[in-house]
Length: 284
Image 1 (cartoon, rainbow, N blue to C red):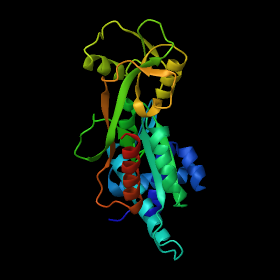
Image 2 (cartoon, one colour):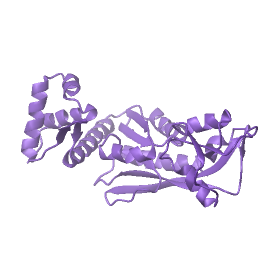
Image 3 (cartoon, rainbow, N blue to C red):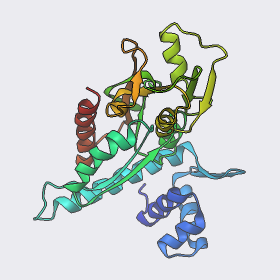
């Protein structure tokens, strides 16, 4: 059994927006024609690829597996087409879709990928910054191909590559003289609690303020709202910040995760090598 390319194209278009109307417009076909292609694909595979519920349209497990196949297929086709061009036989092409947490995405990942894209004109980048608790779901739904996370994941279907260890310290503004108020992303952010437990300090009934992401925490310290546990690589140039205890460091391992595949494109290999080199430089 083979899968018809027009059916796969229709399926992949729907997965990008989870909206049949938008996908039909993108493919310049009617919504009924799009729906028929999806139905024919599901009939050929004898599988359900989408489920409709109150939250909207979502992929089944089979649909998630198929969209990863489509992404791999599209990237490999683009890679072959690029390699056939005599003026750029060694160039790489494709899409880099990567998600991570706020302390590493703008400061480390974006500079790394910008360097890669600047020397490969057919590389397209999409980055997503989310809380750690949200990133796995994005990978499951095939909305990203790589995820940067701590060590909380260990699954047979995932590759896990250590990029480095983020060193976190408790800091405050040099002129801060207020009470012990700790700044976190949100109520689920446990970095401060981990730091305090490691330091054998009080963790019960502490006062916390929530400032959304790592850059909110830095601004909070800068405006003397309280103390925060921050990565050293983000505060090294902050002359108005002081580390409360230079001997107390919370190390958080940073891993790159992606689904195991039978074949990895040249772009995949270059992304992996570029990230490893850049993280080693910034987190040294």
